[in-house]
Length: 142
Figure 1 (tube, one colour):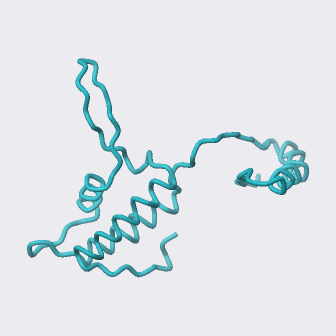
Figure 2: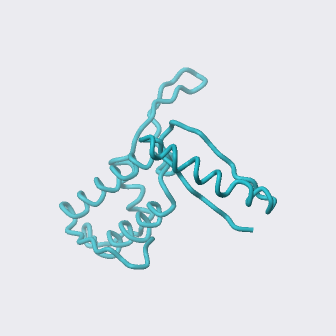
């Protein structure tokens, strides 16, 4: 059975037409295969993608971990992730059952695509300016 993922952002009438054409051209075939198309309608922002996450861990953090030295030592990707998540991450207010109001760091897995892109830009800029890290695009990072 074929797997399909197709996303349409309804920004213009032509996109509506493309969506309709796609469903018309494929719905019966997928239903016949026993794997009907599923249509989800949302106005919410997408979560960060797996590709962006791979670029963050295998690209950005790996390059920081291999190039950055602080006080005569290097740190692993997990340490740099925690450092930057605390420095640039998004915090949400959370009220505990006893009434205490705390700030909780939002996990990068909870960030929207836009939030995660802005976060990575801040991480790269800081690492370049404060630690002298030079970023190179790697072909094997999706």
